Image (cartoon, rainbow, N blue to C red; front, side, top):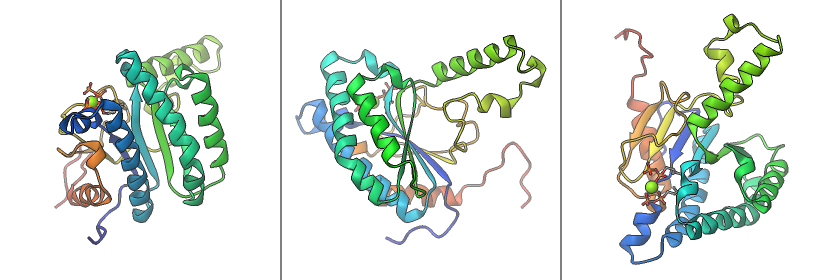
Length: 240
Ligand code: IPE
Ligand code: IPE
Ligand code: MG
């Protein structure tokens, strides 16, 4: 399949959902779905590289996901650490720069250590920026941002009257990245599940019924092609 010729989003964000259902459909334990999901990440990263997408944010573990059964959480953390250990060299070779957003200090210490190692190892790369959202919750992020700003006001560094959209954006975990242009959610759910609530204000949304482990490069291209047909208006009147 040819890659779409029309406009390519600069930043794609994905809610990688449906791992559990993928496993259930096959009579397998949920963790098998997560393992297969990690394989789909690899193909997606390659696809983004092919399309010259600049930023890819993957919702890998939400702040709410800590409330899942202990065994699943433990297995997911183990899988994350293994993924980073095994794939960092490959990411490096593909010129990918790894980053992470979320309350990273909530992750198990060995996971944090590996994450920082992987981030450090790829920090000089200038191809795709791959941002993993880990222990990420948008409401927490907004509260953290508000607290940050309050401290700066109390310290007298800024006047509260100076706070505007741009300044607030600079106090979010995503301060270094542009807002996503395209949001993809797999497994057909029509909700944001506490993902990038502020940043997705004008993002184009694409929902596919495919479960995340079945999501292929072709599916990514189809989403990007669909995005290319959209007319983004940002509340303005369209000219044609
Ligand atoms: C997404 O798949 C992965 C994580 C949330 C970690 P799910 O585990 O939510 O899969 P479903 O939604 O139960 O099928
Ligand atoms: C969102 O999926 C979180 C991730 C994909 C990491 P969930 O499966 O946790 O979301 P809900 O429970 O369907 O809203
Ligand atoms: Mg789910």
